[in-house]
Length: 372
Length: 119
Image 1 (cartoon, chains in turn yellow, green):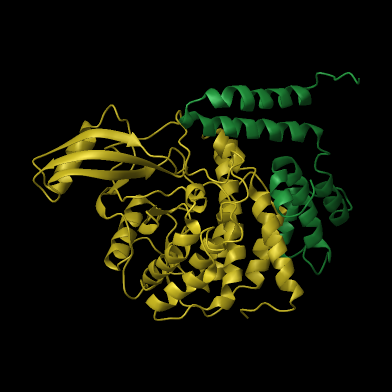
Image 2 (cartoon, chains in turn green, yellow):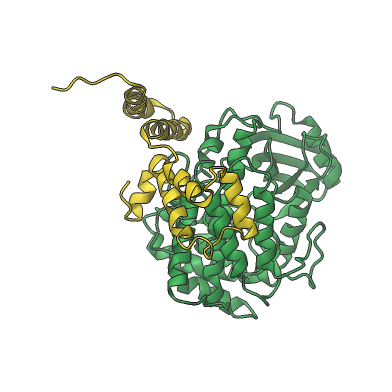
């Protein structure tokens, strides 16, 4: 997850459209036999042939490959275009492993969330060099910059925002009492405090001390909403992480930051200024006003959305993206990966810090926080 | 006409300009993003050379730590523990804002301009 509404590493907002051609990769497209053998065994097929493996754009945290697969017999006979997801060469500590991601995908699929259907997962690091999962390839584009700059965005944006609202409501209908997710822990205290603590813990590993970010986290901790519902939170639900085909939502992608938390966290992330790809006036991820999003959500949710709490989670979103940018920079600073994209992302935290400080200023000027 | 010195700053400016006007248009589309990142990195480096360093941060650290033993890391720890707060330093938020604006003048002046802040 890289890129920002204000200006990404290439001074344009979106980095999900980037493939760094020379980066060290896990999957070796010249040696696909072990993967084909593993898939055949996993799917109960007589034989699996992989005609092609092409690296897909985007994903600084994960590596995504399109696989052209032909399976004889088994669970998925015939020809398929699938996606293989594995960890990039260096990981950041906020993301879940592929086994957990697969379980979340299955739960979301069953709950009626549009996702690229899960096919198989492999925990054995020896097959391709790291654990991975395989999903169907869903149609559409994800690049935020292309979506928000589409000449028809004012036509398809509002109904798309409504679809996003419905998808979010279905995600948030998944609760700790309805689904067991391995390796997911329940927060021991209000989710907002737990999330702030996760960011602090991640920043403690960093070589780049950020006083403004720490101030924002202290403010969030002091003003955290209490007594909120607990549900599955996607954790990275924003423009750039869902597929749009002819103006329609086809799949919600990138579940690697999923966790139990406050459902409003996803709304704040989607609406945060850092994810509008420069289309600041369209507050839902640069695609539409908030009303269609909220309408779609309320129509599909048993619990109406508490709109008062959303600004808290928008400030949290800015702090979280600033934290992730710090950690991406550490991947460069600590010598793991020599990537200009990671180095430039590591310079981005003050962008989110400024917007967060100004949101705090506006809320403080009102005299009291609206959600407490 | 004033004579231009061929300094580090002007060289970086020239390299960035040449990259953007002469090289980038000739690149295949899948390499243009990388080239745009290089141009952005060069522009940041040029502004970093002529910027006034971390003066906003040092002025804040001087105000908070009269013994001159403060660092960004110690300020982070003190904000975390509550030793430094709006209560102990009423203009803390405004001064932190100045620190990030000073960084953005180097790192992304367009971001500031989009918020009506002149770099």
